[in-house]
Amino acid sequence: MPKLVFKDSGKVIENPDEIKSFLSKYGVLYDQWGVDRLPQKLIEDYNLTEEEQQQIIDAYKEELEKLKAEKGYITEDIVVLHEGTPNLEALLEKFKREHHHTDDEVRFVVHGSGVFPLKLDGEVVEVWVEAGDLIVVPAGTRHWFELDENRKIKCIRVFKTPAGWEAIYDENCKATMND
Image (cartoon, rainbow, N blue to C red; front, side, top):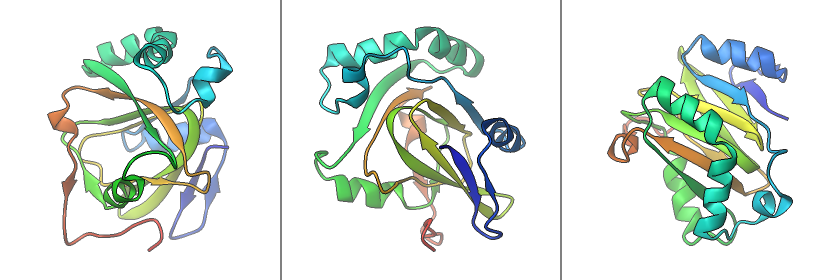
């Protein structure tokens, strides 16, 4: 179940409409597109061919085209993280360092789950996402990402430019969701 966890107060929000409403105050887009239109193989398989990856993207063509038109995005791809991912631990170490981007970070979760801790008004708010959830973290928003106990996630990523999505780290800020 998607949820927000406020690290300072311990408050939890689990209602998707309340999650969407709260995050929208900070320019964070949260929505649920569902995964019911995908065949089970495309949902659960983490070793997808290019053709299978394109089938997933094509299944969400309408939503992706609308998002691209509204936000100026130009391209999308599929990213998978799981126990079989080469250098998984090194990647996760990089992702869990607090950073921001000059472009939005857009993820639609096809399968699996994870946590996007965001710094909003100085407080860390964890956005727990799962299959069917869309999150758009606006450019400049301090955040990081961690896999949850399931240790796998498959997402559609959407970009304006690959260069704009590069992480910008502040070496004086090393907070993680475990701090």
